[in-house]
Length: 112
Length: 109
Image 1 (cartoon, rainbow over the protein chains, first blue to last red):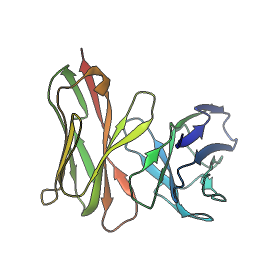
Image 2: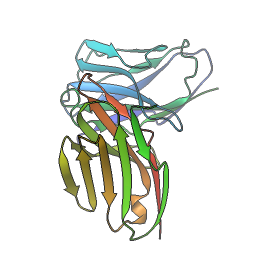
Image 3: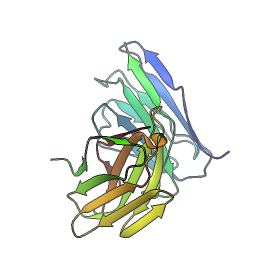
């Protein structure tokens, strides 16, 4: 089955620890995105990548880092510099930038 | 003021009712998306449109570019339609989506 997967679904970490969220797609999509969702707010773009080995900052990139070494994979690292990391994180992909986006199931990160 | 405003924020309906969710935006756009988010968090793309109207089953999306407004209609609503409906726009000047805050729809049997 073609799709986009994120793991794990729930993640708990202690304050001050870096944590990496996984995002994999087998749709052969060029573009991939990371969004953050907080209660009562719209999705906000953290980072996006339109091609392997290249990525751009979104609106709220501070405290996050990404890599795009393979077309299928776009992991997001939440660093200790992110002041408020507890949130729901969604990964998405599309054939080209701004085409219809396909979303993963999300990872809910709680920092204790 | 947000670039994308949705109304209402919350909507409760009885099964079978006709539902309308509205989206207004303040920038020039190349396309508008309607998305559905279920309680578990997963998001599904419903429509992507740049003019006119699209229909898929009981769902209809319309857009008026001059008025910077879009509506999502659900005919013969059903409890399984209960979800958050999100509007997002692609600005002509940018390369990313801007999202509304979503409309929480609850359809009671």
